Image (cartoon, rainbow, N blue to C red; front, side, top):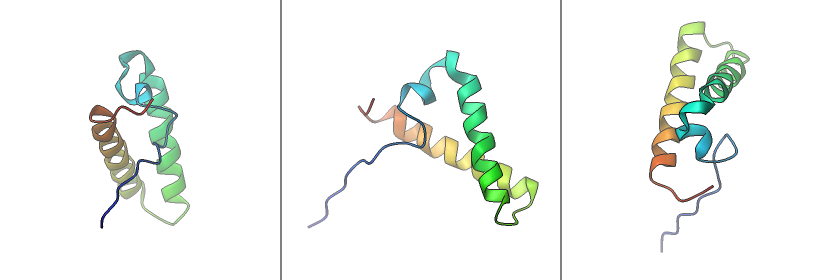
Length: 68
């Protein structure tokens, strides 16, 4: 039996991903993810690409979830 559960997002709730007025929060979150990835010796370009991918994935999840 397969069971899937939603544990949450990197940011507090789905509005942080979807509300146009919270773009500064998304920018800060992406910088945080990038900075963490760079601690593992990633290049700036690779860290930026990874942070963008994380934000895209979490935004896609926010679009299809009822979590708030």
